[in-house]
Image (cartoon, rainbow, N blue to C red):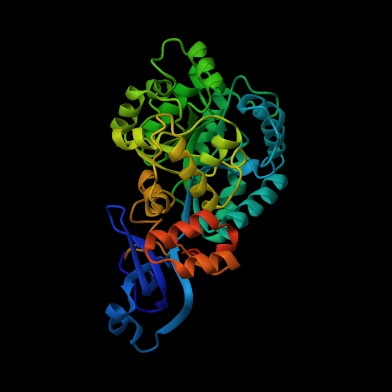
Length: 437
Ligand SMILES: [Zn+2]
């Protein structure tokens, strides 16, 4: 954790970060000091007001100050659920989830049997994340083990903290993406050993969703999850009502769709389920009890007409959640588009409470809150001392309207909300990752 003074870099700029309780902290004239630790990883050494920290950090001999006037330094965004192989599926017209999978997603994913195709998409995908200010993501690969190797190698080359896993789907899947029960578990374990914990990379055990895995495959996945306790788990749950009905037919013994995963040992810390729309009170209590997180994917839910995540019920039940793009079901790589849609979803939630999610809370859900939900609090998603130095440089005057609106902002809420509602990739002037090579 302790950073050396050698190689320290100081930034002077406006600075956004978060307190442990999720409150946004903002210094109009801020100082961010970063330095490599003994493994060469850039970490935040100090963050706060320029006035308070200048003498201790900026005035040291040999220290270089990068002054970024009219800019805001903020934590790199975290995308809690995305599919890198669906980069080319974004914007595909379909009537709903199940026809969308059949007509677009599965045919595209089958192309990842070819390693060179996987390499090309992985590189484009990561560059697109960085261009949009996203520095960490929990992403699906495909059922082909080489699709994991492709993404891991490309992430390693960029020094990014990324988590991915081979998709498990041994039934109800077409030729080209369907895997073999026994072999899929052998491959998963081999990939865990090859990649988990290497540099900044993490592995996620990845059943696509309950309908496309046999009981035997889910049981095997649960056994691996018990053996490798710091590996992530990712899947989908309760996105769409047709899907919920299908799961009830396939798993008549389960209390609910979510509890299918619990029955197979797939709910624990570091397990993340996308969507979590059609849940009941017992499901929400179970999420909290297992410290399992929901990945809220509002642009995808709007696109596929699936329904809305219920923020009020989630907060009442106190389970972990954070924001996600869910590209290719999602409509944009931009965290600003996701935060905009989350705001709308909060207004339209199942209980129609007309919630007005605060700008700081939306931003937190895509940074420090998402990190907490992934079990990475204090590592990424924030710019407090000790954090890995993944951050973005925002230009709040990147468009005429944003310049006009942000200039008029008289509070932090007004400033953040103008960027959430009007922002996109143009706001991201630069993205810096901690271990850039
Ligand atoms: Zn998804």
